[in-house]
Length: 417
Image: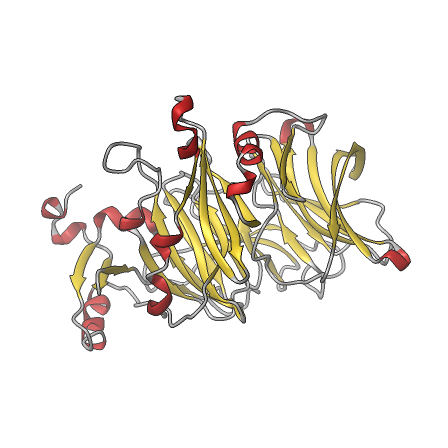
């Protein structure tokens, strides 16, 4: 849809263009008395999950129209003595058709959102050990990936990944266990990076300079891990990575010098052996201009993910001493052609703005929205609406005068640059 074909009635959102950069502010949502430190994706259109002290359970938060409070729908109540406590929480980034799962210090909580029932699934951890996350590997087979930190006495702590099968409300480990190395700090904060992910019912793990891939029963071949391993000398120290849900590429956040991060794209759509060098691409120069925009001398990258439909790649730009205050940017994922040969379109980058005191993030679908909690409010960007927005140029020094336009259409201008 071209801008000329958009009528004023079609426009529900506005963006500002300042110094050549598009800025798209969020809507701010309050969920009333509902605790919103932790939000997570759920199998329900245009909703996120949250832990709710009032119902002592899990709720869906559904945004309403502008000016309306979100609807909070209880999907499981009275889960144990206290659903929201001083636990170390990790919420699965994926889900099945009817179930979400999360870990709370030493146990997993399995919530069937359709049956509105939940139960604790023990994993045999001692009081000195922690679960560092849980994720569906194969929902049909009730297989999960469980991350845990084990106190090994005088030798310190070690991280492990194991494949577990849910049987009779217990997580029973299989023979697949992988050592991940030393744990420097077990934190209750939302993780800035992930060195293991599940994609297409396969577990990808980065450790000691190599990328492995397993289906839960043994090592399997995948182009992402194979190309990574054959080009590891061209990639810096890996902080985290994400694989596109549909297209043949993944994105790595790597550290090429201390404190300096870059985006490296790994692709497996190039069959010509003479062009193998193009299977690994750096996008570091495309993000360098953001540093002065965000007032940073050194900029690190964190909180990366793809949208559920695969149309957007979102990443946080952070100062090394303030990872909890990211500036988020969204980069379009576009079909490969002569104009856009590399899947990502940095020229179409949109600045979403800064969130101070990030607590957690999650995606919604139908429509696709990116949601960040700061513990008090939800910041929501309806990225599906960007093709229908109206853009306004902002001359330097006149940003405050433009805010009245947003009020006209029921939008709030987000914080940040």
